[in-house]
Length: 317
Image 1 (cartoon, helix red, strand yellow):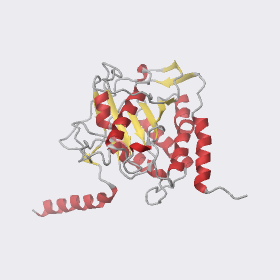
Image 2 (cartoon, helix red, strand yellow):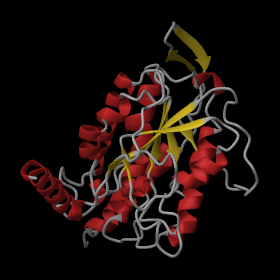
Image 3 (cartoon, rainbow, N blue to C red):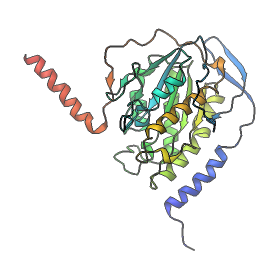
Image 4 (cartoon, rainbow, N blue to C red):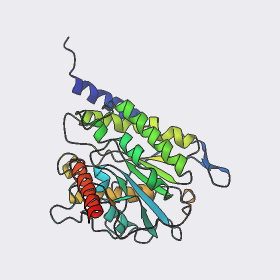
């Protein structure tokens, strides 16, 4: 009998695990950590799925009267790579999310911006072409701003077949473990925050999709549910139904796809128990006229050279 190919085996395993991950979670009492006490609350499903019927109307407030200090964290899909093309705004999903939250008081946290973006408050914590480990290493300054809602979409580059991109390897189980460690770091720095962890959007790249689907399926059981049951406000956002037909280059969404992703984030935020969302700790982030730019990987070295050269010229002038 002929053995199945590696991609075929990965696909079969992803389907098997995906069915298990999508199974309903039995209701139970979950203890959610509070700044004042540990309060028992009825269990919330550990996986939130966007509505299949997301309309284009004005959305209700997520929590009127409470500031939503939102940190969008991840890689190029969070930054909004290619969303400036074809007349796009350059803000990825974040502008649509901002529009959906028009009835809320929203402040975007984060230590990075993009020169392609047009949002006045276009801050985030995302690095194009980077892995979960890199995000974990760099997210600290953004967490110090104490967001009360964190939207995490990370792991796309960890599933790449090239070691130059997937610098820690592309094994889905190992990536899920790294994602859990990143969530632990987030929870330690922002214990009052709601953390929504995306079961990341798929890719239409045949060499990457099977690993991506397996990674998606591991997130509820390996990452979010154990931390929810430990008393943290951590939930999975199921984006596995995002249509690959809305991907521009098999990785990054089209402009319409980015708007859909913004709607997805709003929809899962709307499913979070309202009493989980507390006023953010401390003052809003201080902003200069320009934020720190998240340079694309290929440009990072050139940017460093330009900055260094400018410093030398300043010293010599």
